[in-house]
Amino acid sequence: MNTNKKMTTRMLTQIGMLGAIAVVLMLFEIPLPFAPSFYEIDFSEVPVLIGCFSMGPLAGALIELVKVILNIVINGTNTACVGEIANFIIGCAFCVPAGIIYRRRKTKKGAIVGMVVGTLCMTILGCFVNAYILLPTYAAAFEMPIDKLVAMGTAVNANITSLFTFVMFAVAPFNLLKGVLVSIIVLCIYKKISPILKLHH
Image (cartoon, rainbow, N blue to C red; front, side, top):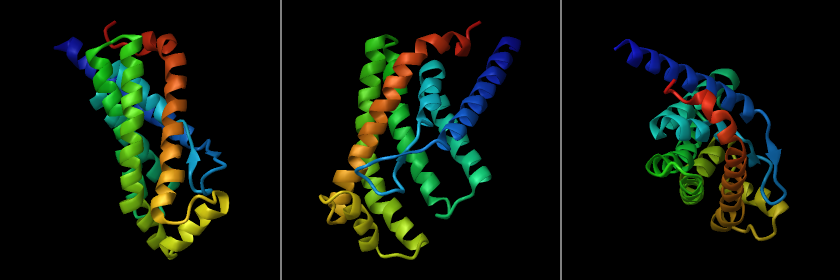
């Protein structure tokens, strides 16, 4: 009983810690040449994915939740939390499938397959969430028509001429690139830091 309590306390501490690291990583954003300025890549999914691999997909989803809540507390929201909820959904779409696959096959190949599937899930879901939830919400929050958001896309990428092409040529490559970069980082560092995170001491 005492061991279980210790493990639960340690797990909650690690979820909080990884969530806090994720919030810090959200501050370092990299602009992309093919997308408007409000699409910037950050590496906040790295600690989430590490948590998924070391403690399971549910822990990963909780880290994602901690990240989003802390970000709202620290930075506030200008989309009535819709942007943050979308961020949570898209983040989970990447990390949870990867965590589920890795849990069933705890090998390097299992991790790679998980991250590939996660990247594809995030890209597909990201396109839908952006087209039907995020972009209309941003348009309403900043009181500008969707056409103006599309025009911001056209300014940096001539292929963007409509909401559909915006999603195809900005949102989809953005999520694919993010998934690939986060996966490479996790692949490089996971084995080095996983002993620290292992709960079975």
